[in-house]
Amino acid sequence: MKLAKKAIATAATALTLAAAAVQAETLSLGDFQSTSHIVSLEGTTKWMAAVEEATGGKITFHHFPSQQAAKSKAQLDAVNNGILDAALLGALYHAETLPLNSVVGLPGYYSSAVQGTEAIQEMLKAGPLRDELLAAGVTPIFGFVLPPYQVLAKTHLGMPADWKALDVRTSGATQAMTARSLGAVGISIPGPEVYTAVERGRLDAVLFPLASVPGYKLNEVVSHISTNGSFGGYSFVMVVRSDLFDGLDTDVREKMVSLGAETARHVAKAQDDSVATLIEQWKAEGIDTYSFSAAELESLRSAMAPVTADWVTRMGGDKAKQVLERYSALTSQ
Image (cartoon, rainbow, N blue to C red):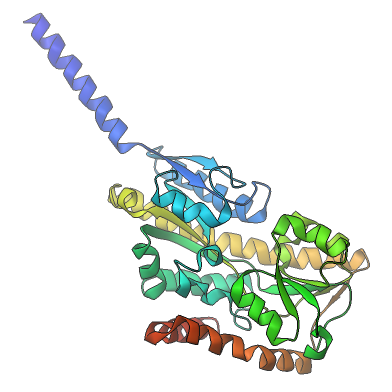
C-alpha cells in the first residue's frame, strides 16, 4: 500500500512538473538593433521585461540583438524556419514578402513617430497589413515607426533644384525613388558604413531618422540637418510564429498584445522626445538644424507625389488603394 501511495505521489509530482513545463515558454527573439539603440532600450527590451513580469514567468525570452541569430533581412525566414520564435522585423527589409507593409516608406505622410505609430498600430489590428503578416506565418504583436526621415548633408538642401545629381543614401526601393523624384541619385549603403561614405565624399547627403543619428554618429560628418521634412518612414513589427502564439494561453496572448500597445506608444514618444533634445545639442555644436519654408515643403511634396502613384501601380489591385487610403486618413488625424 505504501509503495502504491508513493508511486501515486511521484506520478502526481511528475504531472505537476510536466504541466508547469508546458505552461512555461522561453521564446528566442531576434533583433537587428544593438541593445544601446533607443528602439531596443525603450522598445524591445522594455516589452520583454513587461511580459515576463505580467505573465509571472510563463513567458521568458532569450534575446539575440545585433543580428546575432540572423541578419536584418533574414529575421522573418529565421522565425519561419524555427531558428527564432519571435523577431522585431524591419518591415522594409521584407518588402518582397510584405509588400503592402512598405506603405510606411512613402514620403509626405506622418510628421512624428507618435502619429505614425498610432496609424500602424490601428492598421495591424485588422486588414491587409495584418493579413499579409499572417500569410507569412507570423502574428503581429505590435508595431511602431521611426520619426520621419530627414536629410543630413554637407550643404543646405531646400528646393528640388538643390538636390540635382547628388548622391543620397536611401533605405529601400521606395526611398530610392523619393531621391530620384528630387533629381538625386539614391544609393543603398548599410547603416554602419554611412559614416565613412559621407566622410570620404562618397555620399553628398543621407536620408535618416534623427532619433537614430547618435547610434551612427552622423552628426560628426554633416553640417546641415533638416527638422520638419518627411522623406518617408520606417516601421518595426514585433512578431511571433503563429503556430506557437496560437498555442499559448488566452490570457498570455492578451497580455503580450496589450503590453505591446503600451510599448509602441512609449517607444514612439521616447523617439520624438529624443529628437527635440538632439536638435538643441546639434545647434550647440554649430550644426545648421533648419526647417523647410512653406514654399520649400510645397515644392518638395509636389516633386515627391509620383512616388506614391508609382507605389500603387507596383503593388497593383484594390488592396493597395485600400491600404493607402486608410494610411492617408490615419496620418492626417
